[in-house]
Length: 150
Length: 156
Image 1 (cartoon, each protein chain N blue to C red):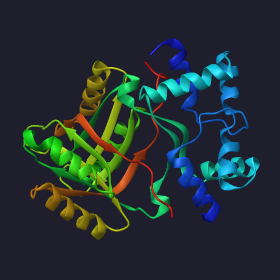
Image 2: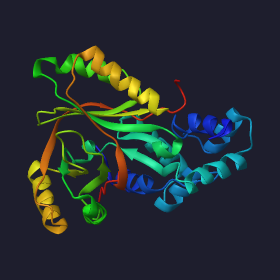
Image 3: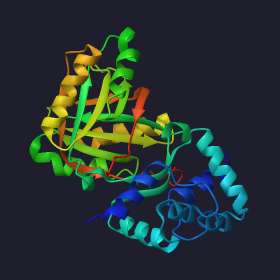
């Protein structure tokens, strides 16, 4: 479970980790604890998978990658097998089942448009599922991934 | 993106080292100075290549268990206005305009995180009223099949 100091630390590091020679010391000063305490707690939160990634969160488009949201109509009895085919690609970063006839929703990132199309074609070919929506983003109004723990 | 940027991104995506001087650790691997690493990281932030320098937290562990994707069909001339209004709701974590597909008229997408499905439904209803879009579908997630961080520049 998270104690008060964990929550204060998470609230702080979600928004900003100092880009400075001793970032953990700066966080420690803000929290009024020792640098070693901050490092130990971050290590524990990463091991417990509360923190998925520490440091740089990239904008895939500005890194030069192409991406799309993709939705498939998967027969219920084939979900596990199709998920395995889809999830084997490192560029598939998120995959959710949703309560809709298009029930499998995942995102694909690839280094080029050509590679992206190739992955889509492979998934369709291997699964034999042709009912597929390709929904690339044209405009991003918001990405907020920090949550208030207070 | 030059060769050094790519090498730096490859190091950064492993997670910032948990040592007193983490940028120094990265600098040694790239055989450049700590000051240069700091300057380049700041430059990537300024260019928007690094969207955020902080921690990505698993929200399920924090009690936000319900995840609703709400899809809205909005006329092109109203998309920007509606998108801004929807994005202004605190319960909305993602708001994207996407291309429409054959048989799929939806072009605005909002992801709503809430503590319960009911909370998500209420948020969607308030968004509909505020944005003046009363036609929408709510797709709740029933299972997370994969969630990972992208690893850039590791495979062709």
